[in-house]
Amino acid sequence: MEQPNDAVTAWRTAGEAGDAAAAVAALSPDVTLISPITERFTFRGHRQVRDLLEVALTLIDDITYTDEVAAGRTVALFYEARIGTTRLYEAQRLRLDDTGLISEITLYLRPLPAITLLMRRLGPELARRNGQPGLARLLPLAGGAMHSMAATGETRIMPRVAPR
Image (cartoon, rainbow, N blue to C red; front, top):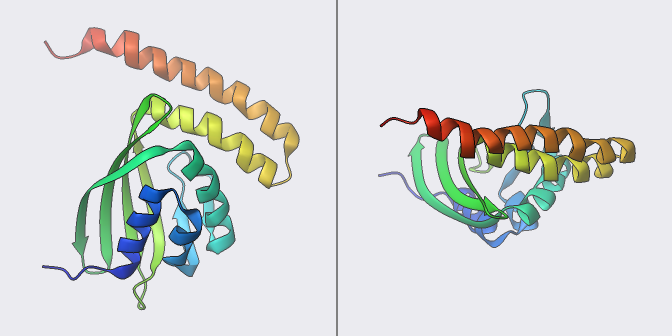
C-alpha cells in the first residue's frame, strides 16, 4: 500500500475547508494547473493558481473527497460538491515532484451544467483580477447562454433519450 503523502493530505484538507492559502502551501513553486473548462489556458506558479483557487473555493460548496488512488508519483482524487443547488463531480490528477509537493494538477468536471455554471461565475472574477473589466461584464452573458442550453439539455432533452 502507498504511504500517505503530506502534500496530498494537505491539498484535500484545504479543499474541503475552502482554504486557498493552505492549498497553495501543498504546491511546488512552479506548479501547473490545467483548466477543466478550456484547453486554451493553464495556470502557472503559486500566484496564478492561488488567484484561481481563491475564486473557485468561494463558488464551490461542500467539497467532500470520496476516493484517492495512487501509483508512484501520480495521485487521482475524486470529490463531490455543489455550486448553489447544482451538483458537481470532479476528478483531479496530481503529479508530485521529487520533494513530494504537487507539481501538476489536471482537473476534470461533470456534468455539463456544473461546468457552464462554474465558467459563468468564475470567469468574470478572473477577468477582473487580470485587469479586464469589460470582459468581466461580457462573460456572464456568454456564459449564461451556454449554461441555459446545458441546463435545458440536462433537465428536459436528455431524460427523453435515457435508457428504459
